[in-house]
Length: 213
Image (cartoon, rainbow, N blue to C red; front, side, top):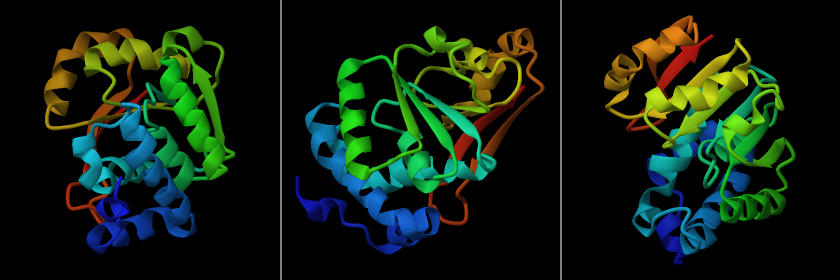
């Protein structure tokens, strides 16, 4: 892959510097992995190459605004580490568990974590449902896993009745919430709101469905 296509410059550089600070070199190395082996192994589509920073890495990393200091985070369906690895790089204070059922993705994530020297990540192969009661977390994150109505069953049990779910969504966020009303009531959800993060650094801010238990 051509390094020129993933060169960090302009608005992306300003945003990445603001979001990652002195850990920017790690973030750049992560993007190199996404742009090469990530595409070669099918974790990222080749068409995403020009927008790895704006659409993916920065889009995910700004979610840190919603997570308190020293929180324990489970990222469900981590795939290429979005948003879990982005958060781990940006926030070394967080204790992050990446949950991914597919072995080939786990192997890739393990290689990247080792290469980047990231120490605040625990990698777990399996489905989130299998880890209920096995991990203790304050926050669950998910991106491009499923529609909200199905995502609730996968994620909320991990919180053991208290904490927050941060589901990265798009324009369908409000519609997905409406379709999930009964399920939200079933789990005794305390609050549900759509929040936008990264407005001060991103041209297209990130939409998050924030659910509190």
